[in-house]
Length: 238
Image (cartoon, rainbow, N blue to C red; front, top):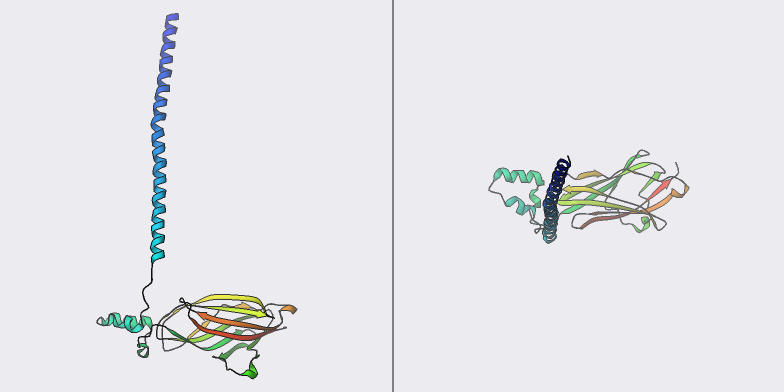
C-alpha cells in the first residue's frame, strides 16, 4: 500500500512538474510574440507618422500655378470644337472678354434692402458723392424686424473665385455687430448676378434705437477687394 502510494505520489509530482515546465515553455514562447507584436505596432505607428509628415511636406511645398486668362483657357483646346463650346458655356465666356486679362472685374450696380415693413428699396451704386448728404441715412428699419441686403453685380474678364462679404456695424463709435459669408464663384456673363445676403434681425429696446454706421466689404480668394461700401441706417421704435 505504501509503495503504491509512493509511486502515485511520484507520478503526480512528475505530472505536476511536467505541467509547470510546459506552462513555463508556453509563457516563454508567448513573451517574444507579445514583444514582437508591440514592436510591430510601434513600427506601424512610426510609418503612419512618417506618411503624414510626408503628406504635410507635400502640401506645404505645393505652389499653385500662375493664373490663366479666359482667352488662354478657350484657345488651349480650340481644335476640339465640342470641348471649346463646352468651355465657353461653362465659363460664360464673352467675345469682348477674350483680351488676355488675368484678373476678374466685379462691378456692383445696386444694393437693395428687403423688409416686411416696406417691401424693397433699391439704391444704385456707387453711392453719389455729395458733401451735403454725407450723413444721409440709406434706410430705416423698425426694431425687432427682419431684413435682407440684396446685391446686383456683374463679372467680367475672368472667373472670380470665392467671393466673400463682411458687414461690420458700429453705434456711437463702438462695434456692435459683424457678419461674414460666402457668395460663391462666378464666371463672366452678359446678365448681372443678383444675390441676397442672409437674413438679419434688428435689435429691440430703447438702447437699440438710433443711427448706425456700417461698412460692407467684398473680397475674393486672393484677398482682392472689389468694393468697400460705407453707409448709415437707422432703427426706430415700432
